[in-house]
Length: 173
Image (cartoon, helix red, strand yellow):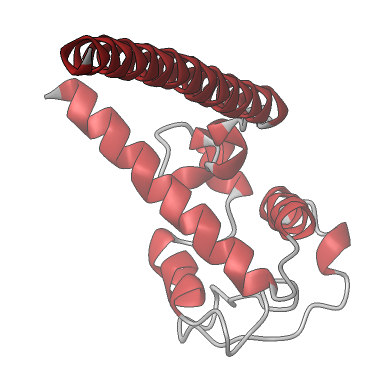
């Protein structure tokens, strides 16, 4: 009888261990499935958040031509029509731009007759149609970008002009 008890207890133990192992496997599968579910759920929400951010981040297209000089005003022209309307030589213009902080573009003018490049105040700057093109561009850029000093807009226009020249010179090569 003792042998029968040990045989029964061995089979019961073996069955118990086998049942316990199957329970552990089942629990492991359930936990793995649940963790996978949670991971997939988190990944889906993260992907949805990224996609919604991309939709919200539509930026307004910027027209680069707004920041460039018109060819009409950018350099010496062969036609007398444009050369008569330009009051400043290129050298005088760049002297003015090189000193943006000492004088505002709204109130300076070079006297061509004196030949010394002296500056005088022009109270009616905005009414002077010869300079209205640059003044309007500078004002527009200052307002759009929130610049307090007009010289920042001048620097921006100068940089845009250089970039435009580089773009055309690289195309010609």
